[in-house]
Image (cartoon, rainbow, N blue to C red; front, side, top):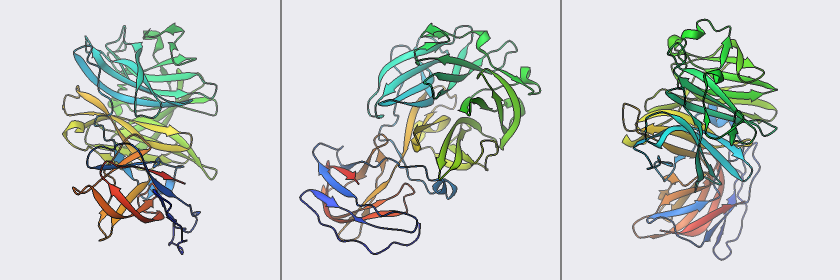
Length: 417
């Protein structure tokens, strides 16, 4: 990070505010510009585009300096109104060409309270389309807690939990698809079978294990890794490995924590691998943990807490990743302690654009709109003179100082480099 160097003079041209780049030790100076666009932001807000997260910075996670903003839409995604059972949670996001596919477990407006697996497509988390059912619970009461990986060859592998098995317990269950539409060789919705359940050799007492709410399938070096908890031996996150993604060999614990694992993603920075785990425990807090080998994870850190009563009980988390960029996370949560009225919420990791008026008062972003936009509340006057400042995804490292600009209520601006 280090201290800022001498600022370079630039010019403001028309409606474009050319930011003054700030150099720091170990970081290349950037020339940034903030241009006012046409369009309409929400009343009382200025809308800033071009703020999505760059490459993964492990130091930000180690130092607990992360600039996450809640999405303006709270929740991001609600259940369908078709049926009277409405409870969606358990998100898992896969990057695809041109956009993302959001998988989730739910009663998505159904006539009965049985969890199935659904998905919806989005280009940019601004609009959603193609909502459909992929896996039907069939012989089980529930199939939920979905976690999906897309392999290098394009194949999809899905890990869920199903209830009940022959011992009346929750167990992992897996499905595969060449295209994300046909699962286990059949058109969607595929009807889950007892034969789809996973086996874990070497895990003592597996028949009596209660593996629910945890579901991570991770693929690396032509092997599948299953991260899981067991409510019969709660307090640890365990790992098993296998060649086919269905039959696993138990390895052992990777993290001591009274929390449930929901997602693991890998990033490579300067040749060093970092594995990021997301966890929850049906309360007001989300957790994360880092590892450099995927086998031993650091003690959990607090990732975030609920915003209010609507997301009081947090029941799941799924990372949103685009290559080596972590854009944010989705989480299932609701207001009911029975955990049966959940919705899907979002928080986005972003650069921080701050407006400073002529008296030195600072106006910081309060929320986001998808991964690449954020809103700054504007004073009731609706128009204020000052300048912009831009900070990195830690919210602390200054990337640029701004030239004089006018912040207007309802104005839309774009940050560019």
